[in-house]
Image (cartoon, rainbow, N blue to C red; front, side):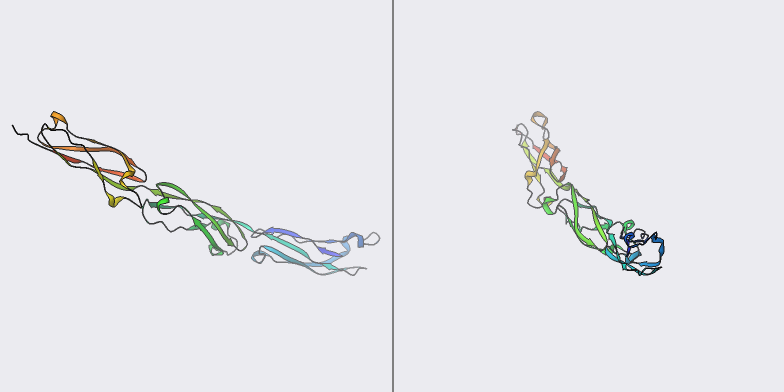
Length: 246
């Protein structure tokens, strides 16, 4: 019996050297495996050695004093690793969600293979109101590729804060009268999703008071303030002080 030896390789790697074994139990007297010659071994090579198993076919061969019984072997080809990376993406809070995509590591492709061998990749990240300002993972998964084991690398969705205008309300008083209560208005047109003016806090309003609130106009200065998912743009207001009657 002459048996083609089993072999293994990774798709895209060098083809293994083929060989065979002679069943020593069948040899007579002082004969050795060297009595066998001319055995041919053939199997899939190069790009044809796709992931899976292939027959290593044994043929031919002669040996003085023996009729050779040939047995095929098996070439086992493992899938190559191929990195698939979710592309980073950007958006502004409240804007349309970006179209997600991925990149295939060209250095991991074998022979004449292209990125088109990869299909069915799923990409997921925060969307809509859940895509709050900051960063979110873009996860990649699923997908398949003939001859490849896909290795996924996550991407990052970066969400910038939206602008939100906050304006100090104009106010009026008569010189010597009680100072008015100051307030501000949040531009509803800038609010996203179901957000309300309540997202804004910590705004400080300052203007002339008491004897300093002389007849004429004074700036109502707006400062500070924060709001989740928003960059606040502040606008001052005006305090108009009318003359008192004397």
